[in-house]
Amino acid sequence: MKHIQHTLFAICILLIWSCKPEDFGPIGEPQNIVKSIQGNWGLTKVTQIDQDASTKGFPYKQLDITAVYPYTDLAVAFLGDAQGNPTTFTITSGNSPKITDLTSGNWTVDNVKAPTAISLKNGTVVNILSIGSYISLKSGKLIIKKDKKLNGKVILSYQYEFTKK
Amino acid sequence: MKKILLLIICSFGAIWASGQGKVTLSPAAFTSEDEVTITLDVTGTPLAGANDVYVWAFSNDGVGGGKDASTNGQWAASSEDAKMTKTATNIFTFKFTATTLFGQSPAELINFGFLAKSKDGSKQTPDYKPFKFDPLVFTASQFRLFPAKLDYTDMATVYFHQNLATDVNLQRMTNIKVSLSFYNEAGDPVGSKQNIVTVKESAILFSYSFIPERVITFPAATKLGKFSYQFTGTVKDANGLDVTTNGPVTEVVYTVFN
Image 1 (spheres, chains in turn orange, green):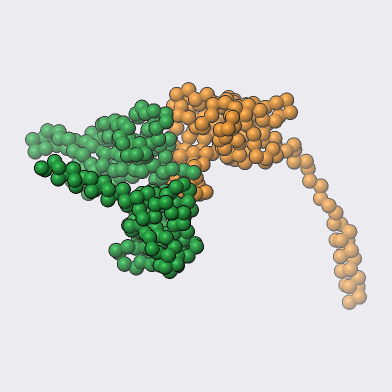
Image 2 (cartoon, rainbow over the protein chains, first blue to last red):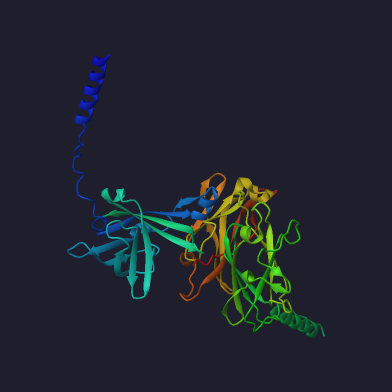
């Protein structure tokens, strides 16, 4: 009996002794989202989303309106300085309907490390667009959303999908 | 003599109308779970010039199962929760969500009405009613708009679901087109376009997508308040000849996003 106890005790000691922190490999450099946004982008898809219908569980929640007018004419350039900070932007609509009130000005983000919104500003006019998935940025797609609110509730959204030029 | 009589009737009509006040609801269409802002212009009513105005609201007018708003208080002593916000001379606003205001479920709420009054009830406006709540359950219909709420800068898509048409001519209609008319915030016509060819999405579904500024030309300073659409087409008569037929005119009030 004592023999078994000694054996179990030795196994326990051995197991505890064998525990040690596991080494994980490096996960790589963090993605610089702001820098990924900088560049020239062409509009490739426009989706209109009835958020009110989504909230109520109604059918007919969204509609691809890209082909209705020449939305794909529209191009956006987000420029940055040498340090990668946002500076100016230009929006060239061509024959596309406007997607913001502005065609040029300065752009900023709400959070440099993890931006969720882009502010476009020219004088006193400010347009705020929200940024979609970061993952798509790696594959050269920028997804931007514009919300229209009523009494603080989002009623209608436009999702713009840009492809890097 | 007839003209004089007509003039007198019109004058009395105008005087009566000016003494009724003016109500605007935002959004124009709402369910019982949406937040609604009442804007009331009390010009010409007994409350004109007042600083303190209180709302007295009630649900389901004329349909049974109605309740007074929880904020009403007593007629001779309105609750402070019912006080409207003065935004300009004679202009007052009040924000509410019907399910909360009336303490009723969406299934129970059909419409609401209200009046404005002084705290002690010595002065009041006429009743403004009934304002219907949109259903919370989707109801398929022959005509549909996407998105349901939009302003005049948005893309609108109007649909005709021919399989849901109740009129025989609309069920048989071919060569389907749509006519659009646009109105400014005062309700005056701004422009229209007739007989636009629709997109045949399937054998039973026709649509047309548009942004007003791409359909009509209107001054940049003009804001559109509403538009109307009407699907038209042709049916064969007894001799096999094409005859024009028109669907009803559907009016859409633009939402003012804030």
